[in-house]
Amino acid sequence: MHDYLKGLFPKRGPPARATPAPAPPAERQVAPPRGVAADVAADVAAMREQMKRLLPPEDLHDAAAWDTYWSYQIQDGWGAALCDFFCEDEQMIATLRKNGLRTVLCVGSGLSLEPRRLTAAGFDVTALDLSPFALGLVERYCALHPPSPRLVVGDLTDPAVCPGPYDVIIERRTLQLFADSDPAPAMHAVANRLARRGIFFSHSHDGHTRPPATPQHWTRPWFEENGWDIWWGAPGTLRERAAWLLLSTG
Image (cartoon, rainbow, N blue to C red):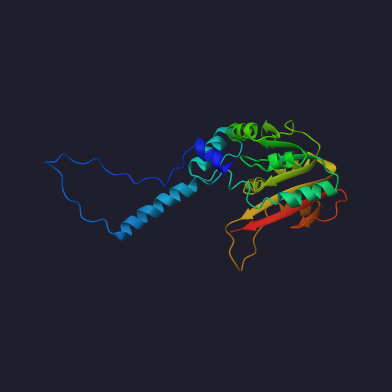
């Protein structure tokens, strides 16, 4: 997928520093050397501007903003790489098969190819994302490299979209984006799509906390408050509904 996207969108380097047009020969003057410190400061500023493009939109319900976000991800050379960090597909597939689970909803999947891999393993998979741009690229890729999951463009907070129920729901670093506001409506909206016996896999990434502070899993408090059976890291025994939580840092 990464190589495929590179072919569609050539990688762009850090934003170039603006340089003035040369003066006419009669007026041209020799400028003093910039100095190493000034060059480094300019490079750092350019890098910071590029890193801002990794941040999700402020309005999580703005499809056009998400299209722009994914476009930048590709143009800056990230492609689908960030989507599929920490995807342990073999463990996921083994757990689903062991528990007789078949239908899967991947929420906020973006450019991720996890839905395709689970489809190839024999599961009935739906990928739900707000960005038609991202899912359009996934569709084009899967047309060249089948099979393809069911791809649905829609808002995860809309209960009419992909109502389910599904045996498994997978979200990776999506629901944590609602932590700055009230996460409960989004959590309830997604959890209501899960069958009475099923797994809700929730991956949170804490890239800010540093030792000795303890990293935070952003959705874990909601699961605890609502009495879910929690699997921490490794899968446990599925009785009714279980929240399978993964925390990454760095």
